[in-house]
Image (cartoon, rainbow, N blue to C red):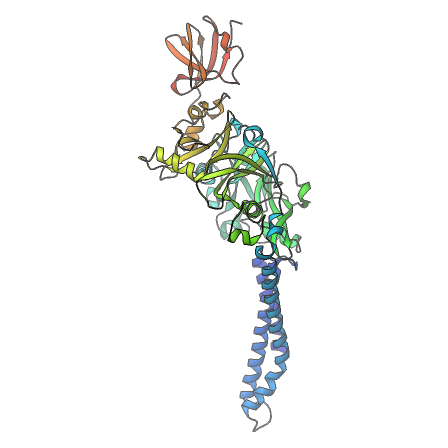
Length: 555
């Protein structure tokens, strides 16, 4: 009977450990602290097994097992002592593991290894006015995740089997080509929907252009069979854990390549200081349609992957770099040279990469920045651009002050460089989370604020570039339908021009209407030579401005 009970308890121990592994999926790697938590859990379960065995022996003795006349107390002592050694060994092992984990964490903390933490990254110094890239108007990442979600979720009703699926809350920022998007896959609504549709997979994902606010429900040529909403072996984290049991990696995140193929990217980590301070060393790419996966070293990750490093990792490393250059105790007492990141950050799309930027301020955390940090989220290359400016939160407060009677709330600013100067571009939302207006705040003098409910008109005041790409953005970003494109063509009857905010605006009288064309770096070189009698065409915008202006005759 005891042997049967022992075998049953061993099977229950194995089952409990299997369930724990299935749920928590730790890496079987002694360099992962999660592995040691799993070991401790197994030892605790083993203690429970010995407790049940001892209790069974005790109950057996109390029911008259052994020779007649034996005392229960004496028999219990005899039977329980055989478990003393394994129990003590298990308790000693648990205590040793806990002490070592605590000791190693303390020894490898910033208290003792401050300069080691400070030197994990290097920072390149640069001048903002000379080296920071001029903002590409056509790649402005204007939408935050909340706004992208509002737009993207409206497309759910256009799919078949709409009752079976929802749209994931991911809305991860990526670049496709050189355009900034937020992308999010569809997901099974619940376990029963998954059970009914898992054989067919997921056919769609949503992508929202962060510049224009236009969304698209993308139908895949091959459905996704691997996703975060799976419940069994095709769950992305479980699938990769079983395939890479000893590799330490984070939760897979959804991305798409430049051809629109869906992938999950899991960042691979290695502790920087024994069991502490995990740092990325590569990435696993999982094709969500086929299940094919590959582990890449950090310098071999494909260029289309936008984010290997998390914002938390980047900000922690930058803070360590600026905080601990002169050791730990300097941060407590004199704080000489101690700087830190501000409490706000955002992302910028530059070429085909995503960059995180945030301000760098003094340890006193006042309302001024000493410069801006720009970090490539695929490579973690860090550049500090020196420019004295207001903090992002100060700029937000200044923008909100311009529309205080409306009660709009400012989103996290987007840092832009226009005509060689640093500005914050800020969206202003109402209580429903809809964008109602936009503000440009001078980063060096945050009291200089310009507000407009038309994004194209606002940006055009600060750049000579063609802003027509933003012509439909205001309506789309605010949740309104984009206006219908109106093509205008005609012949110049009268012509005049004047300077407005440093830019030349041409006034064209044609068939009783007056149209305006702003001269920018992208308009035709023939515009200054426009004359009465010339034919023209363009797209009608607000206030009778013409975008995509062309001279069609009179050459």
